[in-house]
Amino acid sequence: MLSKSTQRSLVILLSLLAGGSFCPGQEKEFFFHDGDTPVLFLGDSITEQQRYTVYIEAYVLSRYPKWNISFRNVGIGGDTAGLERRRDIDTGVKRDILPLHPKAITVDFGMNDGRSGNDQNYARNAPKLMDLLIASGARIALCTPSPEEHFQPGQPGGSGYNQILGQISADAKRIAAEKHLAFADQFTPFVQVIDEVHAAEGNSQNLKFTPMACIRSGRAT
Image 1: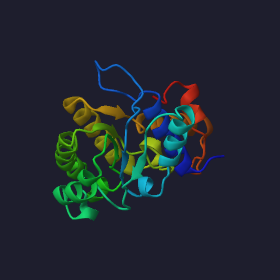
Image 2: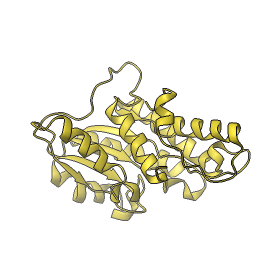
Image 3: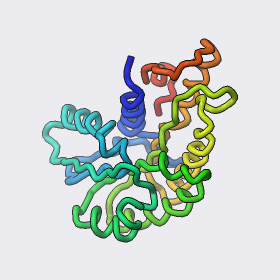
């Protein structure tokens, strides 16, 4: 069985590389391009610890070995869409993003934003962050947070915190649509599969299923 962190990594990877859940009206296309020097991975600890970035790099470089493309990880553990670990959005973007002159940026926040008990921090900060990143001229892929995996009866994916993460994911989808950004939903298909397994097996243990279940059910993208 794959670890939970690897499952999350592959769901993000599959969403982005298969075209993601792009905004309505947009053609699905491979997010990364020849000449992307660099691609930035912006996010929290899941990004900083290379939970998914190494899979994306390996996929792109193995399939397009002649491309002129590079990758830079700028994730910071515990960070939020408000870039609180970098002081604030303006400071973080000016100091950590703009000097790198990114061609493309994946943005994966939300897991820490909801610790206040609601989605208000994300809903307030993410639009401003997106505006500053868009102004840099980079292409942006906005990712939802992944769900927690527990077994609390009556809760989505077995976790009460998923109620908030679901709200944040809806915020991300709305923001991506409003700003015409690529959008990767790694929350909804993951929760659906967890709930289906709970219903079928009644397992009271944390789930450790492979992301192939998402692929087989057609929900990875």
